Length: 291
Image 1 (tube, rainbow, N blue to C red):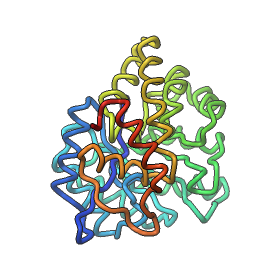
Image 2: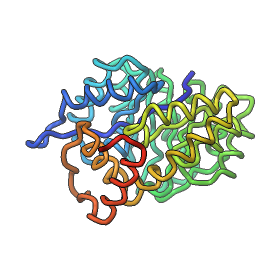
Image 3: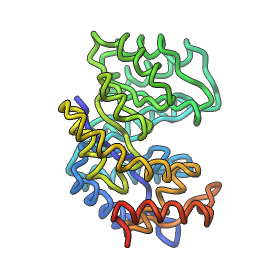
């Protein structure tokens, strides 16, 4: 059902710390013009952890209103009832699917993980993509839990950001008979993940070079690995630069540098260091996206 390149959108803020509605619309138009197949608001890259409940819902409403491509809204939480609230709102707003991070900080056991996701899936009839990112949650979702959740009718895939290609291979192996897709959650591993049967990427890099990321992913999905490898290595230095510090610190600075709407970071995130900014500028110039 979902395939290709989906940017995990940054959230631009105005000087008075509100969501920059017009800037967000411009950024969406930019990535759509770059050929993306969908967009993902309210994720980690969108600073969801610092959005109020009202802002979370406002952001989803704005994106649904102006997007021309499918919208997969981040609606996860470590509080099951809160995740359920966000998911119900997103469904009512008209999103095409939701992205649900595994509960962070709580570190539930396998039974808790199953109960958490099943409760939301049973309550809201909308396609759901799981999100496994151990570096953020403190817990790597077990393959057997993912395999069991893949049997739930409206749990249709996973964004896998464990950094382990071997684990992705296991997930694909154990869900091969299910209607279940695997998205790369690590920009740098997108090409090998697609080569094993992955369906695309939910991407930070695509905020800045949506045309190149989309070109690589589309080529790989068509089996044109010569073209895909060429683009992969072309954008690899920028990919590394965008993760020199905690995401979304570098990507928000990159957006500002290339003329996209960005605005400040919300605390506790602080601006990128001068040394890392210099490396980021260098890679943006090499790719010709910044003068």
